[in-house]
Length: 153
Image (cartoon, rainbow, N blue to C red):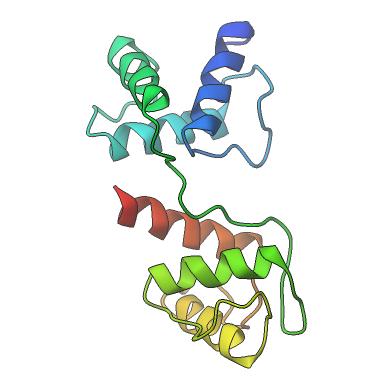
């Protein structure tokens, strides 16, 4: 914690490339709480000791993961807010992720209609920390991403 510089920037870049996002501060070269959480999620997913420190085991596993050709994040999620009436690739991404997590919106058509809203609502109802409003926003995104990480590991 607190380290800064090019090495930290490289670690952050590698984490993002491996599918561990840094949505708040991004690749800023500062090893703060967000970078530590991403390191811990990475360590948990790959069965390493979860200490939030980037030692040789974590570095080696990160390089190994980046050298595989398999994309880590099979379900990219859009930023921002989506709700009934919205359309486009972002909606399609949310629909694909929900279907994968068994909250099937019926159609993966890029249209945020009543069925997609219902699927989002059903997902939200599983977590007391989420408003059960059927609107996809930053909080819902975070929980979907968490479920996907656990599911894909």
